[in-house]
Amino acid sequence: MDFSVDNVSEFIFSLAGQEQWQEEVEVLVDEEAVPAHQLVVYNDEVNTFEYVTLTLMEVCEHSPEQAEQCTLMIHFRGRCGVKSGEFDTLVSMRNEICRRGISAEIESFES
Image 1 (cartoon, rainbow, N blue to C red):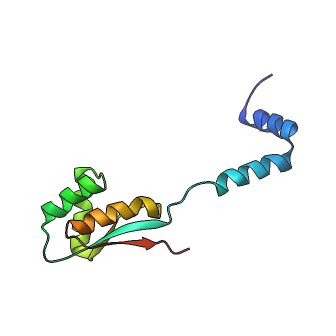
Image 2 (spheres, helix red, strand yellow):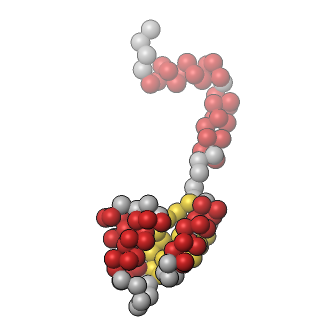
Image 3 (cartoon, one colour):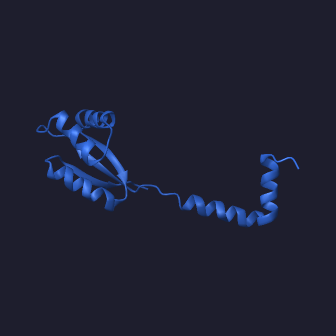
């Protein structure tokens, strides 16, 4: 038997039934994790570019390039979402950034 994408799909549908297959696909899409929060760092007139860049590398595990790009956005736009993820994961990062004298908050994504 020649196996192509169409043949495999027909075979799967014949084994599982089309309704059951669609239900499984819907469940997989529903379980896809989408971060609901972001860690936002704000600009100030106190901290240097180098200090903010180093902080993002150490606390958020950014690459030097990523940290530098975020620092530039913080400077020119006044803020930058530096990390997305679950609230509990971001709390410790926010606390450490604030402990270092940099203003940061966790914001929820709007649905």
